[in-house]
Amino acid sequence: MSDLGKVAVLYGGKSAEREISLMSGTAVLNALLARGVDAHGFDPRDRGLEQLLIEHYDRVFIALHGRYGEDGTVQGALELMGIPYTGSGVLGSALAMDKLRTKLVWEAAGIGAAPHVRCDAGIAPDFDGAVAMLGLPLMVKPVHEGSSIGMTKVARAQDLPEAFALAARYDSVILIEQFIEGTELTVGVLGDEALPVIRLETPRVFYDYQAKYFSDDTRYICPSGLPAKQEQAIQAASIEAFRVLACRGWGRVDLMLGQDGRSYFLEVNTAPGMTDHSLVPMAARVRGMSFDDLVIRILELARVGTD
Ligand SMILES: Nc1ncnc2c1ncn2[C@@H]1O[C@H](COP(=O)(O)OP(=O)(O)O)[C@@H](O)[C@H]1O
Ligand SMILES: [Mg+2]
Image (cartoon, rainbow, N blue to C red):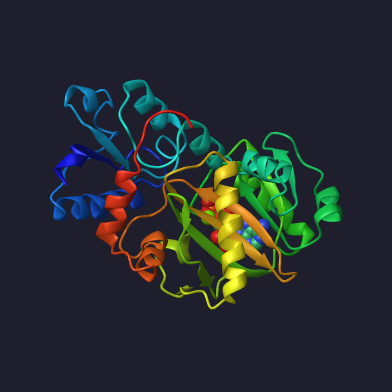
């Protein structure tokens, strides 16, 4: 693996998802070391990125989640330095971090997404108008956060102001979305390929922060059990949803399969969790790829430059 050169694994950072990133980065680093790669952990909270040039790094594995890592900023710095990095470039990363712009691109491209109303934190929205347009229940979410932070499912119109106020604590732009009843799916993307679809079943109101990181009551079903044709169609649509956002390399696409049989895409995660019980590694395993193989493959796809 010496041809991969000296590799920095970026982890930690300054976002709300720092702790998760430390777990992902540690797992990635251990996998690279196990494969004999000259890999080193690098926490951009403590060191300036210019150290990557000074210390002659050849490639970067980005295991940062959220702002300042998954949002195009670190990608921009690496572009300027000319150091190949894993995952999406500046544009794809920035678009995917913004759930509103993501939906606008998808809607323009004819890719299904939940109908929504956009609101600004400082301006009291027309709650009745939103309910009249979208119906109930609704999902209220900040546009930029991850890990289900600041999100509420609202079943009664009178609970909308409180949900809005919560989301407004995290972001200046808030999305009120139609709540899609149905089956939650997530699709890992590796290069040009969609990994096997994972079906999520949670006894909770939705797949919230607690469900994601702390409780073990969510079931992850992979192979998904969907009919083969439907699985393939969802994989193809997920690749399209990923590409139209200018995403590349690897990532994970979240969607709801509505009771009407249609796909409603929720978001793309451009640097999803990479602990050995994270979802992309789970799907890779079903596809016959070990965690270490997956990490190496993602690193081989590292690049610099816009497409
Ligand atoms: N419009 C929606 N309809 C139904 N469930 C939703 C909707 N939006 C989000 N969810 C639920 O909330 C979870 C988190 O939403 P998501 O948009 O993926 O944000 P995050 O970046 O926090 O993961 C999803 O995994 C899903 O369970
Ligand atoms: Mg999500």
